[in-house]
Image (tube, rainbow, N blue to C red; front, side, top):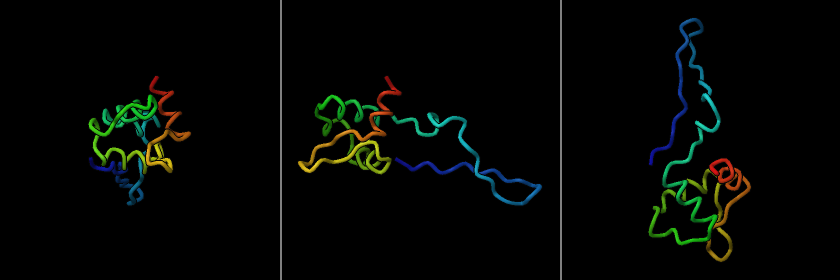
Length: 88
């Protein structure tokens, strides 16, 4: 899965690159299908290892949506619970 790059626009008047803001925060950070599936699996404490790839887990850990507990399992962070609530 590729990381999203910020959209840039060229301004002829000032000759600089301007970073465009996404239309909405939800649209900018909308979880992919695999991310949503992992989110629901972690929230319901069901098996996810045969369903989603490890790269999806890593991506969601980088986004701080899920984290590992000391026993090696996964749990939702505050941000993860907010994302889940928004999806529901």
